[in-house]
Length: 194
Ligand code: HEC
Image (cartoon, rainbow, N blue to C red; front, top):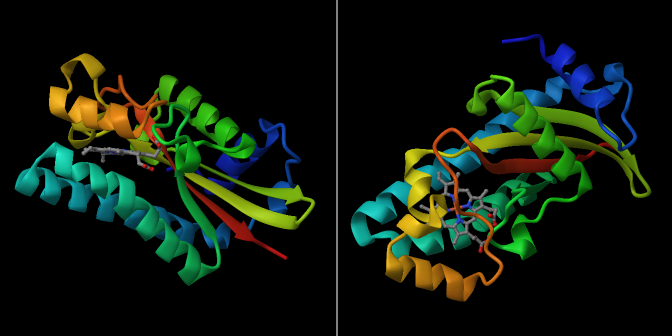
């Protein structure tokens, strides 16, 4: 792996929002952020797999819908952070729509993916200053796995019952058309520093 600081400097200079000096970025925070993002993705994939096998995709909708915000909420409360899942093509605009920093982070990760980086290694970290204080922002890419295609793959190939159920619940769904290895979204963590 590349030295993390080098990556942070690259990421910081490319951002339009108040980039902090590289030495201000607490790289020691990274293991905990990675662990939290990893635990969200791993728990979610495990629960999805189990529910898909046991009761099928229509029933598994509630895993991506209810379980993900539940795990993110627990991680947020336990750490004093804001943990969310976001995407440039969200299914649920209320929870899945990225803010300006997250949009830029997702775009950067897309570019790095296109340049040949592995989707599972994509992450961005930066310290930002906002009216409410300084925040550590972290985004960890969520790669599209085979398991995700049932509900985020080509809309034309989606089972009709499932398609109808998703269309009814998410009239502005943009989260289809993915293939394995694409970036489905990111786990985003915002940590107050002051
Ligand atoms: C059984 C169907 C289903 C499967 C399988 C599924 N998802 Fe989802 N996904 C959904 C639904 C429904 C939502 C909207 C959740 C909500 O209401 O916030 C969603 C939302 C998301 C979001 C939040 C951003 C958005 O689009 O609103 C991400 C990120 C995401 N899914 C990633 C994944 C990944 C990664 C996988 C594979 C590991 C996966 N999903 C598998 C149904 C599914």
